[in-house]
Length: 207
Image (cartoon, rainbow, N blue to C red; front, side):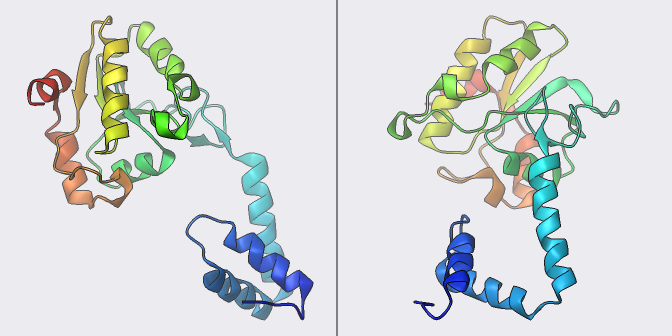
């Protein structure tokens, strides 16, 4: 798909195509759509993107997206700060929130341990999780990693690191099939997995 008649058009298509999940055909449709919009609408769209990059930060406590130092969950006094749900990514926080079955706090690792991809424990937000637990208020940590080999490896590593603390370590029930990502699980299945979470030690016995 060449757009040699317009270098700027080609550059715009390439910019959109660089986004995850956006192919060149979809990128072209998006560019053509923007060209048909009023200049004020395109300006507003551009301003939103610039503000997103400038004003959105990551929560200093849980690493979720935030507009202040603390995110909407960590700063909410009605959330149960004795329970922390550990997830891989921000998308997982949004998926769990959509179930309306969890009222604790979160901790976003920023990925999962994957030697094949060169991702080790030091590349994730693990030390800050241990720091939160060490403060003594946390009673339960829920491991809500994806049902993949990398997710299981990360769960086990976290379990070993947290075993020294007097807390309950649980994991979401395996209503989600092996190899599935949390963000793609339907809300009912994910909600039940959270409600029927089990002690992590039981998953080790069953392996």
